[in-house]
Amino acid sequence: LCISLSVDEMASLCDVIEKAISREDILEAISTAEASKRNGTAKVDSKGSEKIKEVEKSTTWTSDEIQLLVKASNTYPAGTVDRWVIIAEYINEHRKDKSTPPKNEKQVIRQCKAVQSMNVKLPATTQNQLGASLPDEDTWTITEQKLLEQAIKTYPASDAERWDK
Image 1 (cartoon, rainbow, N blue to C red):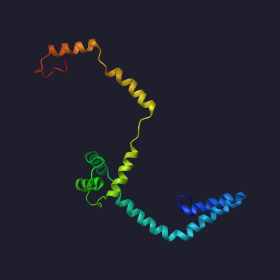
Image 2: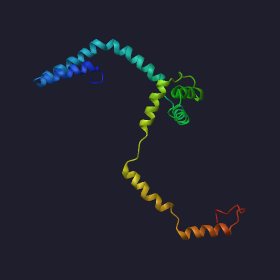
Image 3: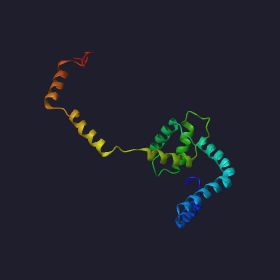
Image 4: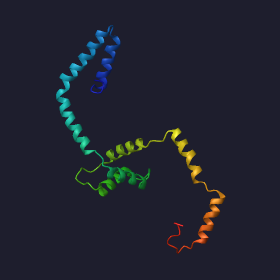
């Protein structure tokens, strides 16, 4: 119900609920709002849902297009004149599936924000675990370094099995 109502309708419903004295009054207000929504906007919803489906169909992004978006965003940094127009042209020119409608700058901006919001940082505990375990494995001791240098001197570079020995 909350999703289907407009802001004004939702505000008026909230006012009615706040002024309600009993639970029955609240339930009656909600059922009245649901009934009016069903009766008054059934036709609008069917037309609106068709338009929404068309818009969603035209704005779906393939993984190829998202990769092109990331590449173009890095190629054309912020401050570039007509950046979003250039990025949209780049995506439309280099994408594999040309059967879908071309992307415009508003779609590119919207998708770029969505991609940026998907970048998730690892929780601090995971970063600490990774940070704690990696240095132990990556550091060389002095004896390991000397053994490596000795092995490089012992086995010539021309030997095909140099790294196996």
